[in-house]
Length: 192
Length: 192
DNA sequence: AAGTAATTTCAGTAATTTCTGAAAAAATTA
DNA sequence: TAATTTTTTCAGAAATTACTGAAATTACTT
Image (cartoon, rainbow over all chains, first blue to last red; front, top):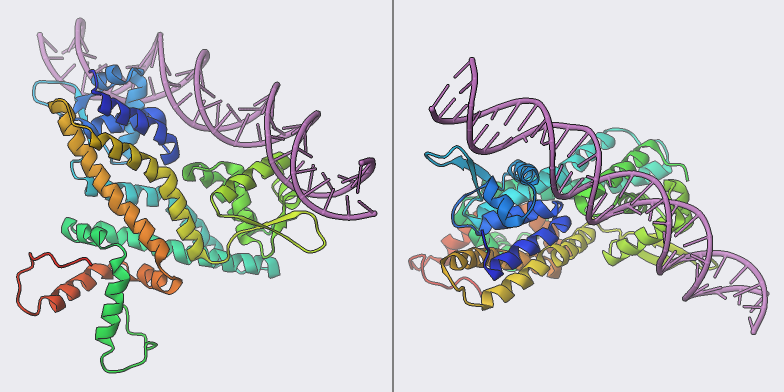
């Protein structure tokens, strides 16, 4: 398959960015190609288009499926697997967020929780544990955000995305409204 | 410097996670060591503790400084550079977020914007451009979130982090309050 | 300015990751 | 079941990335 110049450029770019994103060049290129393609592609087509080996494509597709960024399907009257990416970019972003949480955050969170069960045995270790506690708390909050985002429906998510820096304003607004009685800010009502 | 078992485990873990985070093992270990250390360390100390070469530590520190995750300072009466990480984990997280945006998002955003200036020349390219437009829009929103978070003061940021899934509730609350007049939801007032 | 301590650079080597081609396995059809 | 098509596996080759030691540079002291 001959690619239009802009498509070609995008595919190559994704390949190069791959290393920054924790995937290799071929995996990046395969994803880009599938993302831009109107119709699902079979492995042979990807192989020809990218000019890499069939086995490399096979491994790349496997990895992309493990990230849940690519799905396979069958077309009637054709024995081959056809591959495609989800349509909705928001869905894609959520998947990416969750997979990265699993791979980049969870293992560390597990180690930190384990470690923090133990008692520090001297001054140095005590300070280290305090630092680990801080990191653990933060990672848990970030992790929770990630989980919570997965629960939202597309409408809510889209709104939240558009909100951006307006969130603190919203918080101030809430403060103003919920403190009408004149209570000082300190009382701990906040969460539910 | 002999490390306490839990500190040792954390340092090694960071080293292994490094490859998932886009840094190498030594860089990960150096960061972990500095993060847990009560006092700033000089390069020789890091070299001895980690058992890697002095030059490797030098390169690692340089990279961590390019990420703005490590700072150097001088102690009176000592010619050596001393290195440390910022105290505040929230500040660290913001720095990380911004650097990752710069490295992982901005280059692609630049390419997409350039490409989308051009006119697609056929059907296939037209579909591809629609997909690129979707990705571009999403990346711009994410990028804006990242920028906006940088502006918040620590208090606001901490509140936002704790909020999590309560945000949609807050949005619903806002809707209820701002539509008291009885207007239908469609009118575009939202942003300022 | 000369001498010393600390740091950086960089060419070469080591280690790791990516990729390929061939063979095996799995899936489908006859 | 045998033949055919498609996919996966995997050992070794190629490419890339990480690391070291030696030399050069920089920063400081006398």
